[in-house]
Length: 175
Image (cartoon, rainbow, N blue to C red; front, side, top):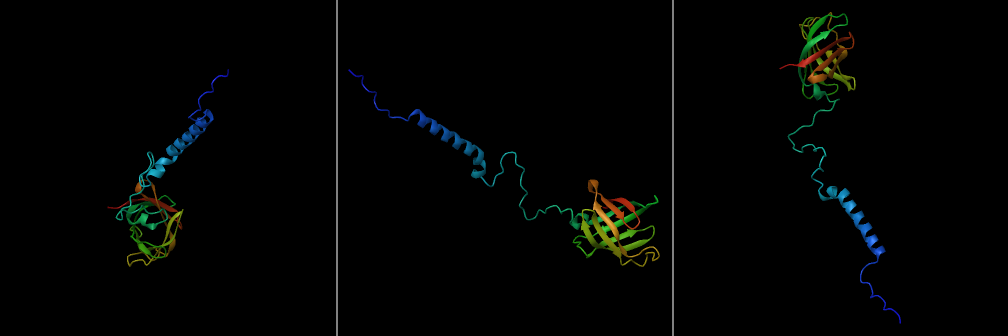
Protein backbone atom coordinates (compact mmCIF):
# COMPACT_ATOMS: atom_id res chain seq x y z
CA UNK A 1 0.00 0.00 0.00
CA UNK A 2 1.17 3.36 -0.65
CA UNK A 3 1.12 6.14 1.82
CA UNK A 4 -1.29 8.89 1.16
CA UNK A 5 0.27 11.92 -0.45
CA UNK A 6 0.32 15.07 1.61
CA UNK A 7 -2.41 17.54 0.88
CA UNK A 8 -1.49 20.17 -1.67
CA UNK A 9 0.25 23.20 -0.09
CA UNK A 10 -1.74 26.38 -0.06
CA UNK A 11 1.15 28.65 0.96
CA UNK A 12 4.42 29.77 -0.51
CA UNK A 13 7.46 27.65 -0.62
CA UNK A 14 10.40 28.58 1.63
CA UNK A 15 12.15 30.13 -1.40
CA UNK A 16 9.09 32.31 -2.06
CA UNK A 17 9.04 33.54 1.54
CA UNK A 18 12.75 34.36 1.28
CA UNK A 19 12.16 36.45 -1.85
CA UNK A 20 9.25 38.32 -0.24
CA UNK A 21 11.33 38.98 2.88
CA UNK A 22 14.19 40.40 0.78
CA UNK A 23 11.80 42.70 -1.08
CA UNK A 24 10.21 43.86 2.19
CA UNK A 25 13.62 44.66 3.73
CA UNK A 26 14.61 46.60 0.60
CA UNK A 27 11.35 48.61 0.66
CA UNK A 28 11.70 49.42 4.37
CA UNK A 29 15.27 50.58 3.78
CA UNK A 30 14.14 52.82 0.91
CA UNK A 31 11.34 54.36 2.98
CA UNK A 32 13.67 55.02 5.91
CA UNK A 33 16.33 56.54 3.66
CA UNK A 34 14.20 58.51 1.21
CA UNK A 35 10.96 58.95 3.10
CA UNK A 36 11.67 62.19 5.00
CA UNK A 37 12.81 63.92 1.83
CA UNK A 38 9.85 62.67 -0.17
CA UNK A 39 7.24 63.32 2.50
CA UNK A 40 7.89 67.04 2.97
CA UNK A 41 9.97 69.34 0.82
CA UNK A 42 9.05 72.37 2.98
CA UNK A 43 10.25 71.15 6.36
CA UNK A 44 13.97 70.60 7.02
CA UNK A 45 15.02 67.17 8.20
CA UNK A 46 16.02 66.93 11.88
CA UNK A 47 19.54 68.28 12.34
CA UNK A 48 19.47 70.32 9.13
CA UNK A 49 20.41 73.99 9.41
CA UNK A 50 17.39 76.27 9.12
CA UNK A 51 17.02 77.96 5.77
CA UNK A 52 17.23 81.73 5.43
CA UNK A 53 13.96 83.56 6.09
CA UNK A 54 12.09 84.54 2.95
CA UNK A 55 10.70 87.79 4.32
CA UNK A 56 11.13 90.61 1.82
CA UNK A 57 12.01 93.11 4.54
CA UNK A 58 15.05 91.14 5.70
CA UNK A 59 18.28 91.87 3.87
CA UNK A 60 21.16 89.49 3.35
CA UNK A 61 24.54 90.50 4.71
CA UNK A 62 26.65 92.22 2.05
CA UNK A 63 29.29 90.15 0.30
CA UNK A 64 32.92 90.68 1.23
CA UNK A 65 33.56 92.59 -2.01
CA UNK A 66 30.45 94.79 -1.58
CA UNK A 67 31.36 98.31 -0.40
CA UNK A 68 28.13 98.37 1.64
CA UNK A 69 30.13 96.68 4.44
CA UNK A 70 32.00 100.00 4.81
CA UNK A 71 29.00 102.32 4.95
CA UNK A 72 29.08 104.68 7.93
CA UNK A 73 31.41 106.98 9.84
CA UNK A 74 34.75 105.66 11.10
CA UNK A 75 37.38 107.22 13.36
CA UNK A 76 40.66 106.13 14.82
CA UNK A 77 44.41 106.54 14.80
CA UNK A 78 46.74 105.73 11.95
CA UNK A 79 50.46 105.21 12.44
CA UNK A 80 52.93 106.47 9.86
CA UNK A 81 55.89 104.33 8.82
CA UNK A 82 58.10 106.42 11.14
CA UNK A 83 55.90 105.58 14.14
CA UNK A 84 54.05 108.90 14.46
CA UNK A 85 50.30 108.53 15.11
CA UNK A 86 47.61 110.83 13.75
CA UNK A 87 43.79 110.89 13.89
CA UNK A 88 41.82 109.96 10.83
CA UNK A 89 38.09 110.21 10.05
CA UNK A 90 36.38 108.45 7.15
CA UNK A 91 32.79 108.45 6.03
CA UNK A 92 31.64 105.95 3.41
CA UNK A 93 28.18 106.67 2.04
CA UNK A 94 25.53 104.04 1.42
CA UNK A 95 25.27 103.19 -2.26
CA UNK A 96 29.02 103.47 -2.86
CA UNK A 97 29.88 101.97 -6.26
CA UNK A 98 33.01 101.39 -8.30
CA UNK A 99 34.27 104.65 -9.87
CA UNK A 100 31.59 106.62 -8.06
CA UNK A 101 31.78 109.15 -5.22
CA UNK A 102 31.73 107.26 -1.94
CA UNK A 103 32.24 109.69 0.90
CA UNK A 104 35.04 111.66 2.47
CA UNK A 105 38.32 111.39 4.38
CA UNK A 106 39.60 113.86 6.91
CA UNK A 107 43.06 114.03 8.50
CA UNK A 108 42.70 117.02 10.86
CA UNK A 109 46.36 117.28 11.89
CA UNK A 110 47.62 118.05 8.38
CA UNK A 111 44.78 119.32 7.53
CA UNK A 112 43.63 117.25 4.58
CA UNK A 113 39.93 116.82 3.74
CA UNK A 114 38.94 115.18 0.46
CA UNK A 115 36.37 113.19 -1.44
CA UNK A 116 36.67 109.38 -1.72
CA UNK A 117 36.07 107.55 -5.00
CA UNK A 118 36.15 103.73 -5.04
CA UNK A 119 38.65 102.56 -7.69
CA UNK A 120 39.09 98.85 -6.82
CA UNK A 121 37.49 96.14 -4.71
CA UNK A 122 38.90 92.68 -4.05
CA UNK A 123 40.53 90.31 -1.61
CA UNK A 124 43.05 92.98 -0.55
CA UNK A 125 40.29 95.43 0.37
CA UNK A 126 38.65 98.48 -1.11
CA UNK A 127 40.97 101.05 -2.66
CA UNK A 128 39.90 104.66 -2.86
CA UNK A 129 41.20 107.68 -4.72
CA UNK A 130 41.16 110.96 -2.82
CA UNK A 131 40.61 114.25 -4.63
CA UNK A 132 38.47 117.38 -4.56
CA UNK A 133 40.12 118.70 -1.40
CA UNK A 134 38.36 121.50 0.47
CA UNK A 135 39.79 125.00 0.96
CA UNK A 136 41.07 124.18 4.49
CA UNK A 137 43.37 121.43 3.13
CA UNK A 138 47.13 122.00 2.83
CA UNK A 139 47.86 121.99 -0.93
CA UNK A 140 51.55 121.24 -0.31
CA UNK A 141 50.68 117.90 1.36
CA UNK A 142 47.23 116.92 0.06
CA UNK A 143 47.73 115.45 -3.40
CA UNK A 144 45.03 113.66 -5.39
CA UNK A 145 45.52 109.97 -6.05
CA UNK A 146 44.79 106.41 -5.08
CA UNK A 147 46.16 104.35 -2.26
CA UNK A 148 43.66 104.69 0.58
CA UNK A 149 42.71 101.05 1.30
CA UNK A 150 39.96 99.95 3.68
CA UNK A 151 39.23 96.38 4.80
CA UNK A 152 36.76 95.07 7.34
CA UNK A 153 38.69 94.10 10.46
CA UNK A 154 38.02 92.10 13.61
CA UNK A 155 35.04 92.85 15.86
CA UNK A 156 33.40 95.35 13.51
CA UNK A 157 36.50 97.49 12.99
CA UNK A 158 37.94 98.83 9.76
CA UNK A 159 41.60 98.44 8.78
CA UNK A 160 43.13 101.46 7.08
CA UNK A 161 46.27 101.47 4.91
CA UNK A 162 47.78 104.29 2.89
CA UNK A 163 49.80 102.37 0.29
CA UNK A 164 51.78 105.45 -0.76
CA UNK A 165 53.17 106.03 2.79
CA UNK A 166 52.72 102.64 4.53
CA UNK A 167 50.60 104.30 7.22
CA UNK A 168 48.20 101.86 8.87
CA UNK A 169 45.42 102.11 11.41
CA UNK A 170 42.41 100.46 12.98
CA UNK A 171 39.20 102.49 12.86
CA UNK A 172 36.01 102.10 14.88
CA UNK A 173 32.49 102.94 13.84
CA UNK A 174 31.58 106.42 15.08
CA UNK A 175 28.24 107.02 16.78
